[in-house]
Length: 126
Image (cartoon, rainbow, N blue to C red; front, side):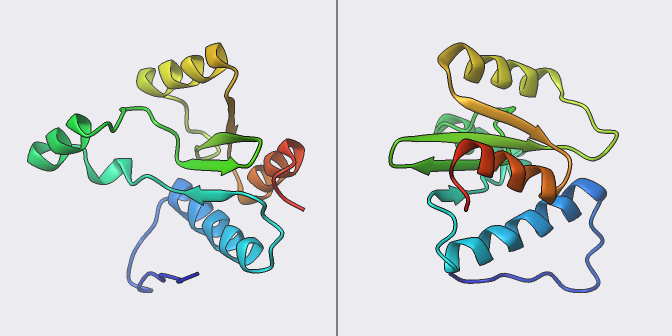
C-alpha cells in the first residue's frame, strides 16, 4: 500500500491532523492484515467550486458524504471526522440520517483512537 506524505511546510487544521493520523493507522492495519475491510477517503473537499465540483456531482459525489468509507464481505460503514469543537453541517446531517434510515453504519469521530474503536466495535479491525 503506497504511503503519501505531506511536506512539513503544509499546515493542517485539527480535523485534518486527526484524519492524517487515522489514515496512517489504517495503512498499518491494512499491511498487517488487521483490517478486514477495504477503505477510502473520498476527497470531497477538493470538489467544492467550479467545473471540478460540477463534474464530481454529476458523476455521483453527494455533498455531506462522510470522510471514510469501509466495505467488507458482510457489511460496511462510514465515518465522519470532526475536530473537538466541530459540528455537522446540514448536508452532513442529511447524509447521516439517510444512512440511519437505510441501516448503514455511520459514526462521528473526533480522534484516530475513537475511529479505531468504532472499527473494532463494527468487527472490521482486530
